Length: 208
Image 1: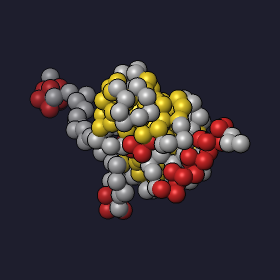
Image 2: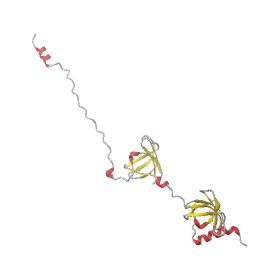
Image 3: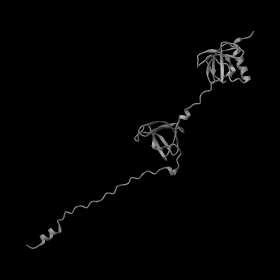
Image 4: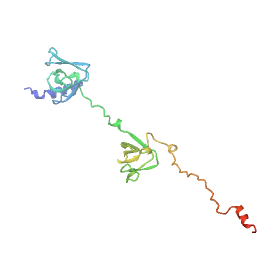
């Protein structure tokens, strides 16, 4: 006696052998997409049955049921219409490529040795030290010229002044030397002499 409960599994095995895009019969609720340029959704699992709607390339459908002849009962996620179509026109939905990696921004330390801070302040406690050209992952930034980073090498996190970061690896010649403070030259004013004018001294020296 034929066990109808085993038909989906048998069909899945046959589709694998035949190289059909839908590689297995999934449980109800699984989502697939139309692999052909278009596909007709019919009222019954027969090429002569009434056409309910025309599905487009990449339209997604939800698996509902199947029979032993390669027909699947599906529901269109775009139109909400439920009907039958042949499984060879469907393919498993490929997950969209993760955009997380493209959003990650990296910077390079442009000073020989810089300490990471717990908070974006020079007086803050430190969480570690990074060296020249260490590659750091950007986690955030503050409006006062600080960037929160993570060192992928050891997982250390902290704040660093944005001016110490560069978008590319830097060479020794690109490292600017710290500016020396130049003292302003002040003119030395001559002190006014407290001695009386020469004429007054000669006048006092004349005999009376």
